[in-house]
Length: 333
Image (cartoon, rainbow, N blue to C red; front, side, top):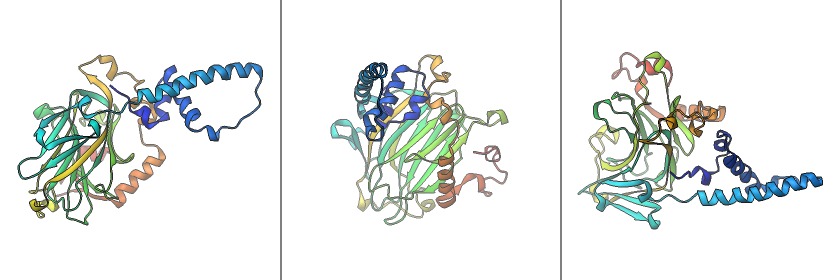
């Protein structure tokens, strides 16, 4: 599986893996791209010899950064699952267009399933009047009544109204954990990055690297957590005007069809299953590193900001649906 994190230059990734190659790539990030910030100091002959060796190693690492960062194409990792006439590859397969019209929506899925890791895509949503449409990006174990699932669902709206993102978590077949936020930008004007980080400690949903939801592993308190079932990566574009926009009040306007959503920068990093059991329990996997076990102070501030200013619904506080607060809400999500 390709590692596009090389392309994104996440230095903490390299710090979390005790690998000489990755360490050199981490050095190369600063050497190749931050040379202007490095002070030049007199060095001894012995230091010069060391620096010559380091220079060649760094050049090699710089080279591997670029050659390892091949741009993923749709067909590398995905296949169409629903209505192939409504999915169009563009930019030589590095991006795709999904179409919804009165005849059909469409969908695609990853060729493999994964157990823990990180999935990410850049998506540009339907512009203008998108009421009644749902663009979904999610992980699913595809195991029916005991399925695990991690959902992003983008709920369309009337022109000028904000897009709503609904997230949901299924663990061992139990879902109904919806939370909704209104995005603080226009997600149809440009591409934005939507990511799911999944490790043994928690699941984190990100929008442009801003955490919008955290679901912690509270198995010690008897609360199910998805950790045993591999999940595939899926996306669909479909009509759901019976519930998607203002609870179904706003219906889809088919005169605005066809509706288009765009995807690019497909990035999956995780343990491919079936595969060696040692992968899923390997503490040196970057997503299991110390910096990914909890939000840092900056992320925690952004998380609180999102929930304070942009959250519009939380199942934890819905007393009509849940007269008794769900146990995971009491335990802290």
